[in-house]
Amino acid sequence: MGKKQHLDILRLVCLAVLILLLSTAFIGAVQGADDDDDDEVTYNDFTLGIGDRIDISNYRAELIEIQSVKDGIAVLQVSRTGGGLDEQRAFLENRANNFAGGAEKGGITLTVVDILDDESARVRIEYQESLGTPSRRASDRPVSSGDKPALTVQKSFDKSEMSVGDEVKVTVTIMNKGTGKAQNIKLDDAPPLPEFSYVAGYPPKIKDTLDPGQSDSAVYMMNAIKEGTIRVSAIQVSYTDSKDNVLLNSSEPFDIVINPKSVADLAIRMEVPGPLPLGGTGMANISIENVGKAPATRIEAKGDIKPPVGLEASGFERSFFEIPPGGEVNYSVMLSGKDSGNYTIHLKTTFDGGDGSAIREGSAEVVVLKREYKYEYLLLLIPIIIIAAWLYRRHREYKY
Image (spheres, rainbow, N blue to C red):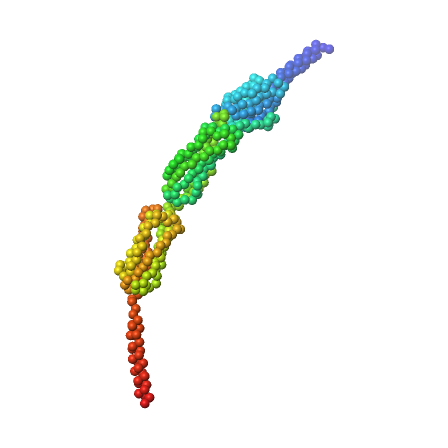
């Protein structure tokens, strides 16, 4: 074999070695890049209820309780299968907590992003993608809601329809239907309704604390002063539980109707006898009825007769304390005819109808006959007798 052939073989061997070294370096670089990609940190957010958990690889993070909504504190139990980690920790809202070195070092980082209410929170988990994909699961341990208060509140009127001037009673009732004590109870019944004037008991006051099953109520009085259909807004109750979490509830709004002011109105009826003989007597029956919607009070009835001479009567003047709506009073007056003629009885009634004084009047006609004499009938017979005699006489003359 010549020297030239040896050199060619040597060049081929060197080229092969160089290619092998470059290939090894390239593969190592690619694998290193893949390892860097697998170690990239990412995150997911989960909404957890009490007892729910996040699982990723051999890590587990379970929401144990919401310690305080107001202060932003939640308690989580974090563990790792196979041991090495089992810790219950209180989390402050928006504060990152590292476990097993944190996400940057192959562990996990947990953050309570938002406490939604006293039973749920949104939790963020940061991790390296090499750990896999996290999932939300229900807890294996029984979930206990603990002792929690639950207040109901109700606002009611003793009437849903009324009139201007009417008084209405408002009752506010609260009840603890929960399993824990309600504390720092406060009612918000504002703003006052402009259609009412508040008489007594407003704003309503109730107990500061209520044990489970207990209730309390408050009453206040109002007067309706403006008519219309009124929307009564809800009343709100606020309270705290044993962890100083602030809770709220409110009643249902409802409508009431305020009608125009109710007033009394009197109707007068008089029944008088037929024509009275001169010197005769008869009874006038008088009825005063309240045809309004409010009581009539301080009723004064007075009567007179025109012309004032010839028909006598006594007892027209009467006083009554009250006539309720739909009620009536009755009385009678003796009439005595002294002179013949036509007479008018006039009755005037004054009263308080609930909107000031009012007057109602009524009248009736009475006739007193003239005196009759028996001989007057005889006088009527005289012309008849004369005519009859004259006719008889003429008849006899024609006959003969």
